[in-house]
Image (cartoon, rainbow, N blue to C red):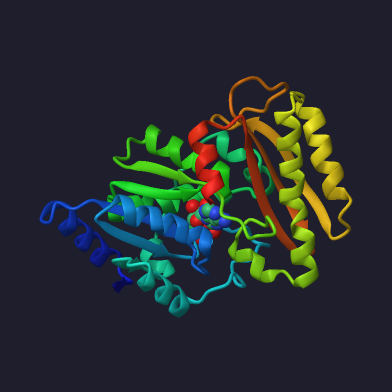
Length: 294
Ligand code: AMP
């Protein structure tokens, strides 16, 4: 496994793989502090592609001024040990100036979609995400890029950007990996103490209860949302940022549910830690099977 820090080196290695060796590239972008959620993406990339490249880059452009860019967990040595175990071929771990050289002035924004849900709570967040993903896709030119349903809105935006700007890559979105308690794996779970970690399990419990109500025939987003809110508000350590029901593909807000898959997504503070989670209602059979495996 080679660790690459320079953008030019990464581009030329990837070009050689594509052109001279004619091998497929699977790319998994991460911010490091790797956990089983990331590893599930890498596992799938390994199964689907000849060469697997993982980037580890804590992207300053996607953090707000009062967010946790400085304290975000970083441990490249541990990450690289894990990546080597997973037979990753290349780790791209650039410094900030490799991605944003002096004079950097070009950003990618997916209009409207980037302003709701997470975007409303974290202005500018998705501009940072789509910009860095666009840069990384251009450096790597992968055949496939792998993202987690954990960041459901991010996955929708990336797919839209790829379509709108004609990136020649296939986006693969994989199910949320959870701890046994139901807590969605996240690098930010490291911020939680034991009591908070227990409190955080309310997110998935509340979403699962809504999903059960949906399966039993409930089709009113307002009532489903109220159920989720009530469950979370019972947990004293939790403070809701938002809970929302949207079309899972377009993110359009829904007043009533029909056969189209719907996304219930939420952001909740547990102490100072902001956690996100979601569940898809009316999933396809394929998604259900994948979810059960994860
Ligand atoms: P991050 O390092 O948090 O930027 O995440 C990198 C990628 O891993 C993103 O595509 C995330 O959606 C994905 N990811 C993070 N947590 C999980 C999880 N629990 N299950 C599945 N994918 C995840």
